[in-house]
Length: 402
Image (cartoon, rainbow, N blue to C red; front, side, top):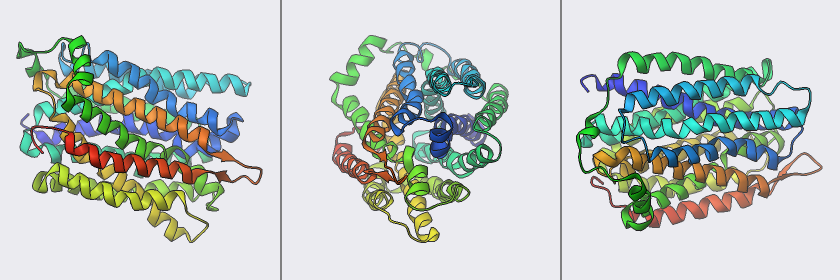
């Protein structure tokens, strides 16, 4: 594509709204638990509904994504995603708290059916339209959308939820998504070069390869451990900081704002670094460094706001940063004609791992009689072990450009 910057901006914008919807519930964990009168276990199901549903649709995406033009597929999936965002705001309006819980659970599940496909299509389009020597930098720009979602969208969503109501953040995602839908329609060209290949694998064979071929199996397993090492922590950060670290409800958005701002600054730099020194070497460094904030954020005791924000900002920066070389490596595993299907498998692995991590964490942590979140440190140990395992697995991820 001639205007590569415009491509990356539009794709990052789409990814931004997808990640914002995934994350927007997280900083409202304490508000949702109080509003819906639910337990941490029930909240974990609300957090997991979206990624688990994305897992199902991503598996289905293996059968279709490489058979059709990518822009058209993205527009269809994104349009239905917008419908789901709108339902999340207006479907749970019953007087009964239990009914509202199930309505929100349904709407997040419906939205997730298209979120996983969106992520796979975005990464496939970026990989198809950028040369290999700049793919790390391109992934860095697109992955910075998560940091931007954390920096701007999540704190704003938390503020709006506190000032107005919990539905407002979902309406914010709906509005932004409608605008970015139009940018895809206007500025992204048809992406159909993959249709010219005659060696495209059969979808069933592609799924078999994910289990039988060592490079693909290792890549997906690697991705799952990376994601579990992150999303086992994320759903309960706001609750932990509010109940255990004595953060006020107004101070909670600072966690996401500062963490996201720092990530926005460093994520593109990490992308360029991975192109220069190698994706694998960049991952080694970031994975080892990330263990320290993983431990600190789950073992903190009441301290100064500055110290707590330093820990949380480091957490978001390194967690998001290590995904840049990870996605660049994994996107180079398949042949171009099979990239859409394989990236859909990768999205499925991420979604499944996110759902598992959220549910497991929800059943480990508890809120005691003193309104304190307990056993969060055990979740931290799980995240650290998964990170260490991923360091060993990355040696077996065989991509064409490391």
